[in-house]
Length: 306
Ligand code: ZN
Image (cartoon, rainbow, N blue to C red; front, side, top):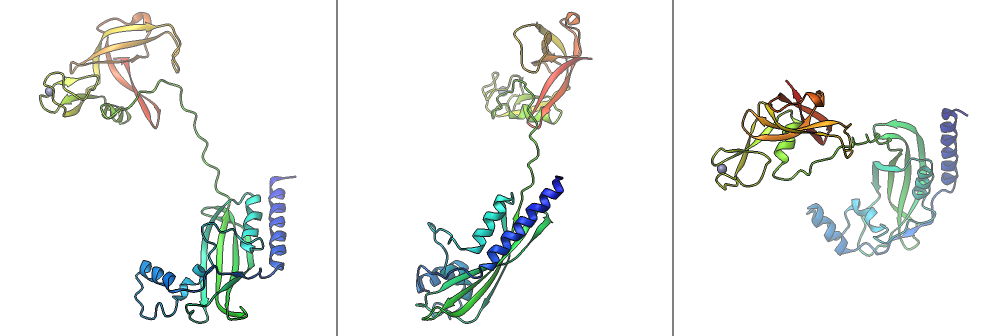
């Protein structure tokens, strides 16, 4: 069976379930927990800033849905057509939902003391449709609110449409390159922001101007705690180095060279020295900085001969 055929069968099954739910017609009346009442009307009009003097003698028509809400601990009625259709679409993989349309029609104003009941039926179920959110189905329900001693006087109607859609597959996560990662702190974030931007930054005291590396909160020369930074030329000479053979280091193939480089600005900085035969490294070797972009979060500085 081709994938397309299987999708079509799913669509067919959804349509047939929709028809089954639609054939049940209106669900049983669901009676409001409380009658239309003045405190709720006052809260509503206050929240919306609606100062129409007719309220709270009558209720704002747009409140109609509020009178029959399930409440915090409420459970959707077993014969609720929207709930039933949501289950069908969830099972078919259309797991996300967004409301798209709501149209209400009011037959008359409601007065405090009336107790409403609502009944709902399933309308159109249209799909599968391609949408900006993903492939989905538009599900329409129609609700009618009733009042009166017999609970048979329709006072308001609502068309409510939702889109049940299949959320797009998240982009595959790139596995992170396995390298030792620096702990970035407030003292060092300027440095790592610099490497990401292709700059080798050196901390400079905002008070006396002394350069220093590695970074720290306080100037060793004058004790000031107002660090700034300058951008280094990126050129220097090997001051000291080691050839690393063992133990293994994630992301490195031994033997490799770690060099302490004295920059033209006078500070010394550690980094891997690449593109070089370890036996050819010597103190005084002229080097320049290179930037190794590991991923969006980390760019490591390294050295290479110049
Ligand atoms: Zn200083």
